[in-house]
Length: 194
Image (tube, rainbow, N blue to C red; front, top):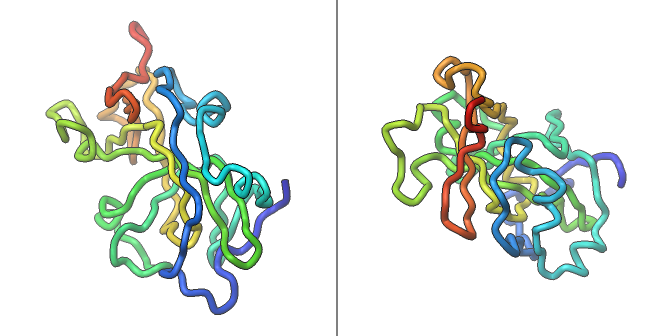
């Protein structure tokens, strides 16, 4: 593994990112207390073309401008018309996709690619937002993708709630549940009796 690199090569157009890889889970993963995106989670991921992905150089971080993004960090990914590098308001964050960086690989000057695990907004679940969902609640999942590093908008701070205090007392974004995209089922990340 090497250190990091800049995600934006000179004269790159961030909107022309082509991701020549596809990632998905091979089987359902069992619900458990955080960390959701651990080694057993990663071992369950299938990437195509597998050989080409494994040939790419692994990095521990990448940079966009002066901002550094490390493996294991939570991020927001731009899915809207917000230009890269914009100053984001709290309201803007709800237009972005939350994710965790699982792995970073680089393909020479072609680009920096990130394997991410997605968090869902409650609206993205089958059945949508329910009365018990709080405003800053996210749902961890085993939904994975490979994205271009140039689509990363900013860092995210997503905490997991372990049942010590009510989630309504948590500041910022938090995660209580886990959505298995293979089984299409939501599990609690909180141990009963916690």
